[in-house]
Length: 160
Image (tube, rainbow, N blue to C red; front, side, top):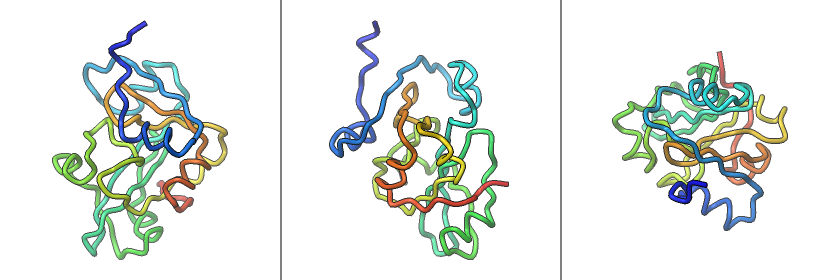
């Protein structure tokens, strides 16, 4: 058993402190490509595996979107969901400065600030979904209803 892989992230600490049931899975990640590659390598279903994307609105505010790993964010639907005229994806080089997380380890829980968050409606079709654990090589399994409640997330259709 790999004891060196038990590092806890902000996301894990927040879930524990809130008494929110969850499981953590650690895996070896030498190079992050995307969530599809991770799910395939670990034999996990794509429809239950969710990625976290951060956007900037026309107002310069930040928004977080949690959607299935194979889906593409519909920027018009996303903007409408957060009441913005338009949104655009945050540049990769800015992810750490805005969220405190790195690409591939970005999770909607425990960012530097709590930004308005939208969870894709398909998540509610499952008792458990998989999101990033807050660092490369870590995943969190939890009930999407608990995630939405914790984040005060809006749940709607945001994909193409």
